[in-house]
Amino acid sequence: MAKFVLKRVLALIPVVIGISFIIFAIMNLTPGEPARLILGPYASQSDVETFNQAMGIEGNFWERYLNYMKGVLTGDFGISYRTQNDVLAELVARIPCTLILATGAAAIMVLIGIPVGIISAIKQYSILDYSSMFMALLFTSVPGFWLGIMLMLLFSLQLEWLPATGVESWLSYILPCITLAAAFVASLIRITRSSMLEIIRQDYIRTAYAKGASEKRVVMKHVLRNAMLPVVTVVGINFAIMMGGAIVTESVFALPGVGTLLITSVRMKDIPVVMAVVMFVAVVIGIINLLVDLAYAYIDPRIKSKYSARKR
Amino acid sequence: MTEVGTRTIKKRSQLVSVWHRFKKNKLAMFGLVLLTIMLLIAIFADVLVDYQADVVELHMSERLQGISSEHWLGTDQYGRDIFSRLIYGTRISLFIGLASVCISVTAGTIIGAVAGYYGGKIDNVLMRIMDMFLAIPQMLMAIAIVAALGSGITNLLIALSIAATPGFSRIVRSSIMSIKEQEFVEAAVAYGATDRHIILKHIIPNAIGPIIVQATLDIATAILTIASLSFIGLGIQSPTPEWGTILSEAKAQMRDFPHLIVSPGIAIILAVMALNLIGDGLRDALDPRMKN
Image 1: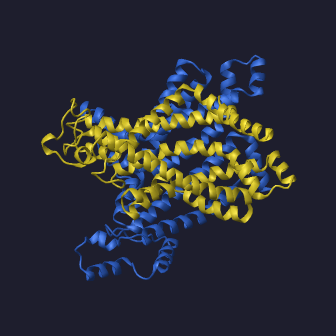
Image 2 (image 1 turned 30 degrees about the vertical axis):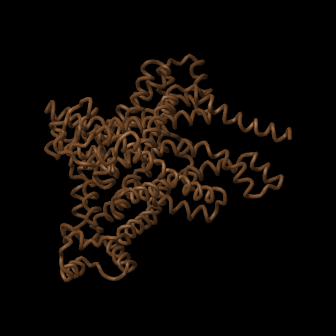
């Protein structure tokens, strides 16, 4: 098992290097000089040169990339072109906000998505099933930012129950979490339902009923455990996307998270910050995927035996 | 002659039976009707409204009006008719959504087919590259590309296409790999069919189902991404009437004129929902075993 984990962590390294190269190339080989964007269109040529020197923007593309990666290997992610602060410090300061947002949204997703999906499957073709499928369809189609504005309009501007933008207290996270969770709740309901329905049709479920097991026992002991694999995958993938893709939600509610940091940096071509954010997201997604695979082993003994077989 | 005749009949019956199954699905048919109406609106947008006068020209004397017989959905802060702008927005969203998915389907199918059919080193290299792209969420990738290239319709199209290609290549590759193992492909190899014949006559027709379904659902995703990018100011810029752009302008007035927010959102929901319904309906119709 330990060997498997180590192998997977090592496999992340080439992926992160590849991503860093792709993003570095996109940011450097497209029109628009960082110095011009940050100093403004009227900055003199000498100002631009001083800026470039101070920021270490020199040499051709390959030299710059290698220099950058050399820094990264020693833990130096450079300084932000825009604020002159240490990039790592800027990124770390933004992580808690995104983490709270993603965790809150993931909690809403799991607490609503899985139970509703299960009920929908057990009571297939009932009114409950139809209405939850309709809700799932609706929320897959609603753009997150629009839902965010509508919630803000209702709960912040009309009813004045919750703050609209920024972070004042934990109350500020309620609307963003709901906004971010909506589409993911929908996908989780659908996956849970279809995965449950597939298992319910299996012979061993009929056997369990034939033995005289109660419906509750069959569902909890036999169906749920077997139906959980795809559900866990989707929960993991969705959480990963939330950590890296809460950009729109964060920007609607003006939250100081990783996503808003990315947007401001990407606009100003603050390359060191963009690089750090993207690599951070890639690593987080890689780790979450690894955790999902480990969860498989916990849920399904057959997969666990595969890992230990590999160890031998 | 008779042989050719039966063959065409057989081929048709496959399509006809898919259509019959699709037709029975009321929600999917509702989606199809909705999408057809929206496509007609997109095609005939310039017949329905005058682009210069209604969509982009400023009428400061008529700004921020409510719903009336003259302005069905009111006017924005520059006095432009919201309804006319939404009609033109249909054209932009559907066009970019369709075009970007066409590009990413083509690119993804080529990459996925080559990787899946030949396997080995080619597969390894191609898929590792695709994995790198997939390690970044699609939205983040699109933002990075569009921010680097600058805003505008063409750049948005490029960004969306690049961001969606890796996902497609994965789907195509996996369905081709599973088809490659099937007995009928083995049989074709046994009777001496060429690679070209096997790919075109056996593998692509059997893999096309999941590709079409995914493409339909991806147009929906693309429309949502276009709107989101425009909303955060990275996509299409005003005065071009994209749905997300209209919303981002309306947001500034939301405290006093909340009705401006509602209609662009509903336009997006209808388009995305229509495509999702069709995609789900196609999935059930193409593969009845999948239907629960």
